Length: 299
Image 1 (cartoon, rainbow, N blue to C red):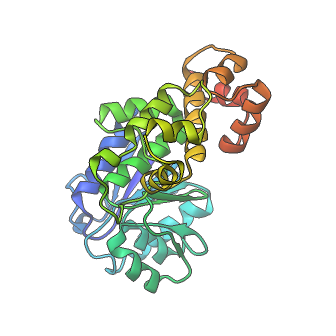
Image 2 (cartoon, rainbow, N blue to C red):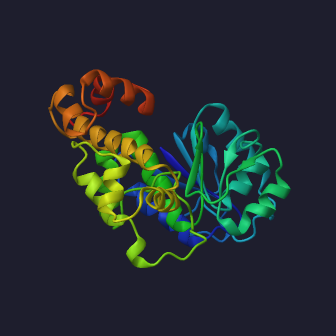
């Protein structure tokens, strides 16, 4: 069950995004709860009782983040966090989470326009600048509306697998979710020819081959150091870290949708030996390939 909890003067765009993306997967029962006087759709209900049993609680952004959030909303958020529900906030929705105390001692992000005022208002929260979204335990905060889509696709991937997230992304006409480390913006204007998108697409198409930083730099026709600098600016992470994450994602898709052996998947995704694959997969995903397949196999 996913409950969209409406703050005062909720932004209709983010409410629509949450409903559209989550309803695109049949595994969720999506409910909208909050005050009718918040400016939300007429379908919103007064009762917050459903928040008590929700697996996912989503807080869209709202117009004025310093507007007081109703006490029953804050209590519902605290109770959801205490019992381990996943909580997702879009942009200024993080202000509601912080007001409830859910973000105390945690990391969070939001649209870059609001980071300074958020940091001043809630010093107990570690604000991460210029990130698409930040996940700290069961709490996930995101930047603007585009980043909110990425965050929700990330949640679907965690709940139902990579293939399910891919299908929802296709259904809502969105690219597969960007990683949390990618920046919201780039300070330096980069000429189109300097984009490394073609190189990244080549990596994804050739994950089973030997990929090195030098090989990627050569394909980009850039000196190695220049390539690394541009790559980190575009993706928010070092080149080989990004490659490992792409290999893990490809392996997750194969575990979910194919009957290939672990050895075959290890070779196809560039991990080499099955032992290396198992070790890196457990490190990145938190479980073994076999256990992951059992949990996400399509019946």
